[in-house]
Length: 353
Ligand code: SF4
Image (tube, rainbow, N blue to C red; front, side, top):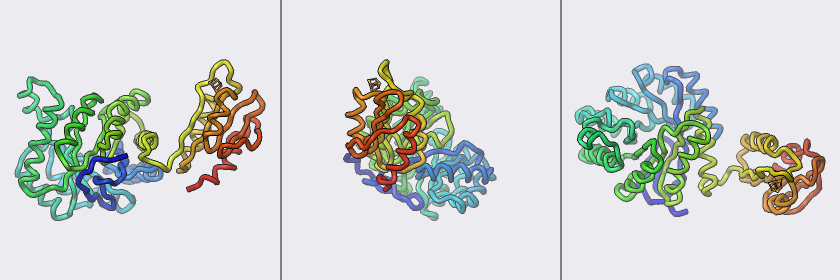
């Protein structure tokens, strides 16, 4: 897939933008000063495939905690700053790899200049993150109390101007709305207007299928159009679920190869097995592996033979006690329904990367 060619920005030990892969982000949901808990959460997400983590910096205790957190994690850390420029300075001095500023609540140009100087000194990039829920109230008032795409872009334009005036171009941009279609339009326009890398995401999408579908509505067209250099799927859920959702979405778009595809049928009157239960078991088993593999679990032979053959490993239930097993397109025998996971384990190693 051809990606938009944006400027490349170094964040800690990774490069975002250009033709580099789309980087998976999430955010901790624990107060940052609770170092042990925050580190545990980050390490779990790292293991799941997280590539960039953001933490909130609400006060100086949080900013100070960055030093210790940085020593114990392995991925770049972004500090989320609102209202108080001094927290940005402290977070950078403590080792933040990137900071996120919100144009809606940090507006004083002298204070911004101090942040710019500090970022230049430590070679730290800044993400300018416009959010539909916190656009500068003055701008909203001027726009008849309406927050729309043009207003979000206006807010971003005005902010970028301050940075460029001070020869600071080490920027990443984000324009998130809780409305997926607004988000889509905002990023499309932003990608035409700026060459800075874009962090994409629909914000505050809610939980489970609601959040996932709303995120997909906004993000899939962007990714298909090559827009987006880093991604977050914001869910009202545990942050690790955001990482899993990002991996799944990117994988389905061929942007994250080392992951699994699970094909399982919805079941109908012909089903010879409880595919609903079995697919969950297989899914939780595969989740722990970073294998580029397709596994099919099918309730009968009607579509089971075709899907089984097309998968790397496939199971199609002939009846309630016998299941045909396919490996790399060939039937290699049958197994009992209770043996599906052990057969999967047995043949999985062949697909290890
Ligand atoms: S594979 Fe068989 S059981 Fe599953 S939905 Fe199709 S016809 Fe029904």
